[in-house]
Image 1: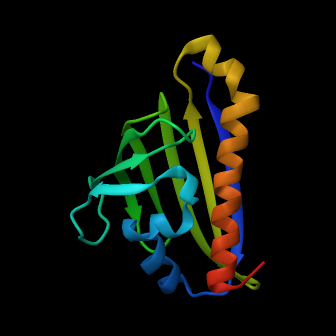
Image 2: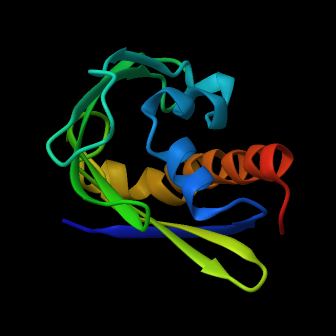
Length: 153
């Protein structure tokens, strides 16, 4: 199984507490996800984020086919980081770490995702032309919206 990595970061003009309040609320995911993803939360218990929390979504990761996506919040050290992992969904593996750190320039928000694709060789062949560019567009959209909302660099 080939594991790929995508890492992004943005520095925002908000406090650690403001960042945690925003990012730890699954309801805010639709704000920072492109409309073309057809993103919809179908279940989340509405509580403060905790390890073991299950969140279910319906998304269109590649634009045309709706897919059920189930993630579990596996690690939480608020307000410094949390990890979500796919339990069921479009990837063979999805492990997404979210880090928050105060710097002299603002709050550094860093995402580190490790993922693997289904479908063996066909999945690997599609990766550079379809999947990787799509993920990069999603994270670039996220960065753009966050900068518009909170300011930063």
